[in-house]
Image (cartoon, rainbow, N blue to C red; front, side):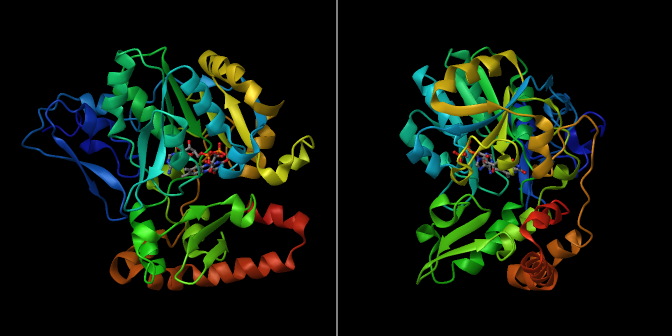
Length: 395
Ligand SMILES: Cc1cc2nc3c(=O)[nH]c(=O)nc-3n(C[C@H](O)[C@H](O)[C@H](O)COP(=O)(O)OP(=O)(O)OC[C@H]3O[C@@H](n4cnc5c(N)ncnc54)[C@H](O)[C@@H]3O)c2cc1C
């Protein structure tokens, strides 16, 4: 088997785990197994591989699909207050899905499965999108949806795929054909954390509450407004912890647990693979006083003609203003310029994962995260509010 032809030559650091290789392989010669950081990754079954090279053609770490420059940027807020409250930021996902259902289409988005794995699933109507609302800050599995989406596209159905931009790239490579009835919508993304780290963390909060009774949410507006927090039920009460006081959130926020490929992600720049990109509009109050910021505002980037057509069609559901990419990117600690910027890998990342594997979440968290969290909390209490925003950007 030649190393040059199949994806065994893709560096582990570059694999996004999208699943396009496995789903494309005509010989079923690729399986997914957890790597040592708990990220599902491809493994080639040498005896079945015929070196056809298709896996390399569809791999978004090797073959980057066509990209588009951002045409317009917006600050938006859904005008339906009930749905807005259930959304992570400005409720753009709800506006998108309502428009797609009005066209008789189908929506793909991320839900928790019964074991609290984040997985991309399909929804036929608004009720089925309820569990898709809310950010799940953990790496999600999209691969199983690719063949299903292809089938539906071929049958003429309108499809909205919402997911990480690397998942959009995997889908586009898998399809290997442009479909007018496919709308792709990705996120502004700071990285997706290890499902293994999440499972290990869950063990620490489900000692007295079984997993099937756990109700965990990131950034639940009912619990803590539009802040950055995690809420879950214990046997006695509902707990709400900030991204500093909660070790799992802190590890995600500081990129200790995000996938290796996220540090040098080719999908987070001004040239986009998705028709529309959306995310949080942090510090929106600096630029747009017209919104009730306490209810959440999304940043939306329209990247293609098709994206512009979809955005125009759903405008009636939104309050919106034109925005500047530079301003959206600034507070988000994201790069929307053209210069490639590699995020710094935390120096203790490997040691953290090694401790996690050998001694579990509580020990790893205590050894590598506790003092840093305490220090950050101390800095936060001593720093004036205005300066704190600048300190946060140093993460
Ligand atoms: C891992 C991750 C990292 C992110 N990083 C940033 C960031 O650095 N900056 C930023 O501005 N925004 C980021 N976002 C996006 C942000 O958290 C919100 O999801 C976004 O603003 C949606 O707002 P909403 O009110 O329209 O969404 P909601 O109505 O809450 O809908 C949530 C949407 O997120 C999707 N989703 C949720 N979890 C996942 C997941 N694990 N994988 C794939 N899709 C998922 C759902 O399918 C749905 O489309 C990130 C999202 C994820 C999942």
